[in-house]
Length: 438
Figure 1 (cartoon, rainbow, N blue to C red):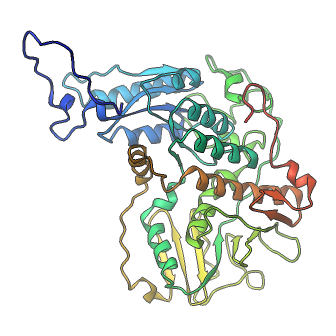
Figure 2 (cartoon, rainbow, N blue to C red):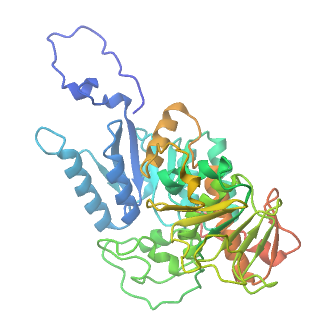
């Protein structure tokens, strides 16, 4: 719990023999020096996260929260089995499970929380967690709106919390190698990046279905407007999809924010655009533009195009037009070559000698978690800090708003407002149900 062991007052009548793990021996970490973590949301992503965190010797998962009793019970059973396997008797019953995340945040023995709910809940839970003095790991996208993202940054900074966004792609080995090559000038001056294209979701009115036993549907909805339960939003039992709710714009903007945000974030890292934003966003079919395009003040562009078409896109020398931009990939185009990279180990380039120079690969995808844990101890900012998470999430929201309005938008990245466009500016925020307004 990041607290030093207290020295018991008075003399002991007889010596007490303690297991080596209690003292931090045998390669283990003493309990008093472990970071205690609580999980809020234990669906597909939440389960994936705690399977990683339970392998860190300096972490102890002590509590979890979910509005779905099946998920609470299944996650508790899985955690007890994982920790029980490390105990002499094979049993461990040290977890607390809550239906309401506020009970978890009220626990004084929890240092940090992992938020793996849908993005509708990310802002409110993050702000309350920061106020409760918890460090935060939050899934992407960090918010449903631009205004929420900025409020989250302000709250995290005010309460001096360590916040890591689940944008682990920028920490993957091949991406870090690609960034190093781009930054070292291996493909010359880079002013263009392609990422695959994604769409946005409409508002849906799906038929009402019986709410599964025990599921707190009102709490599941949280800050969102009331919609009747439908299995497409939430499936009780083993999760069937990572972000099923994103099919309804009321709960998420669709693939552009739930998936493409990874690639937009990676493009920002490679182009050194962290902390800034575009000045112009143009949807496809407008002003002769064939693909959603983000233009920056220095004429750098990020273009969303799954395949490059003759006469519609700049096709770099050596690129095969039959090659798609990979689903979790970015194509960096310089005036002396290109690099096509994705998170799962693919790395190609032109000309081939670009790879002659050896760049160290020191990170894996899981290191996004390690980076956060290390920063909790040092109080430094992790690689996907809240400001970076907000910047990349806002970029995705800008793309959504351009698609929704169907016109070129001029954006002021400093004031974070659209220039002369009241309709677009109104889309920077949305009303939330009480008491969850952020």
